[in-house]
Length: 71
Image (tube, rainbow, N blue to C red; front, side, top):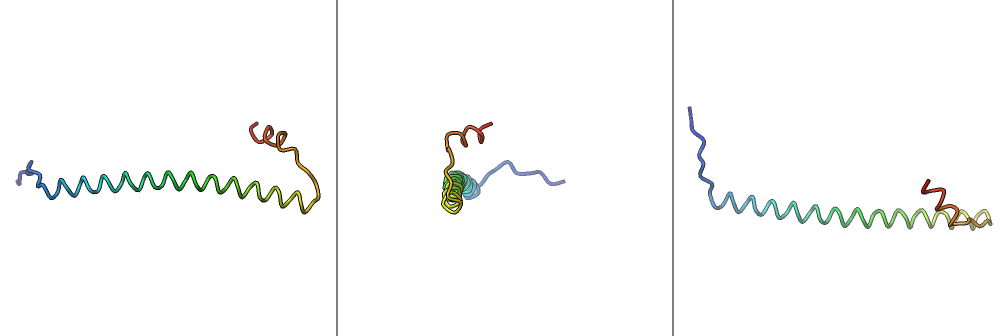
């Protein structure tokens, strides 16, 4: 039976720290990209509404529409 060593090499420790920093960095980048994506999706929705209004020559009461969307 072989005993598991409790000694950690400095190289392994540094590699783990580097990996942890990379994971933190990429998770932060993912959060920023998700925020940008939600903003872009809202802009796309608004643009589609404007195009629809122009094509159908009608106006939408956005205040009333917002109330309906939040319900």
